[in-house]
Image (tube, rainbow, N blue to C red):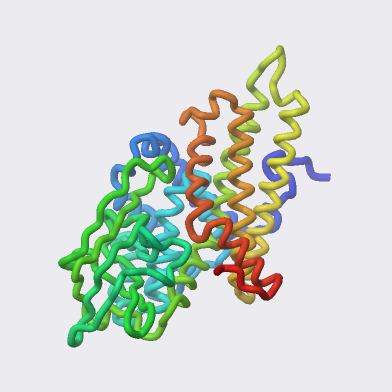
Length: 390
């Protein structure tokens, strides 16, 4: 019989192909060398010193839009992408957000909905990390209810003129292109907006206590004039932006388990070495109960992520299935981090350990890409057939 592995108690590695293990390990190695040694300092300082350089490194590894095909993009599987998200968020949620906003929001929106001209213009450079994108949907007064957004786009001859404000936009301070959703006479439409357009500006959001190793911006559009080619030609209404959110939510299903794993492993190592009352605290029943419960939820969450990834590759996922994964895994990841903090005691609030950083970050992950309540109502409507959103 094989020996029990405390870090892989269900032998989940046996469910992965050699190529999938290689993808996971290559991402883990790159992060260990280039990000992990400094990420706590970046979190404390509230900024990544050279984000565009980091994007180029991600591009060299093939992480940006890795699950998309064509336009020099890797076209890898959903499971490959999920494994990469888990490693990125085991490093830091802000780092995973940089990658997922680029690939699953900005790039996916252009790849799925933009004209061929715009795809050729943006996607190869974005995949290489030479061009950075952001995604403008949320507004100061409209987060969970994007259908009431106030940003507008109006025709002016052959052009479009955009006015409005977008809020909480990752990568926004240094992006080259912003995917912006706006109200028009034809319903909600999407646009690929070069950020050097006259009238476009981005203001950094400061004083965050979460996702500090990630730039967050307010986007301001004041009479931004675009050619008609910048408009996404076919999609109207919320179908466009919500399809992008579904892609991003899938990455969160995996990513949140990366943060949970990092915190759990820190707590497990601490419990085996920290001594109180003459022995390691891992020898006390209450600590063992905490570790056992954390281990259960972590590996159930990983099984759920893997199941959704396999199904996404085989037949696709429903919106409700993605909500199932996002709701469960982020809630459980946050609870794992909070419990890990109790095991570390006072050391749990120190950036010498990753736990408080993951815990703070997951408070944002719990809210973005759909709050707990939104995912509960998505599932509730699917279960009962009744719309309780309003």
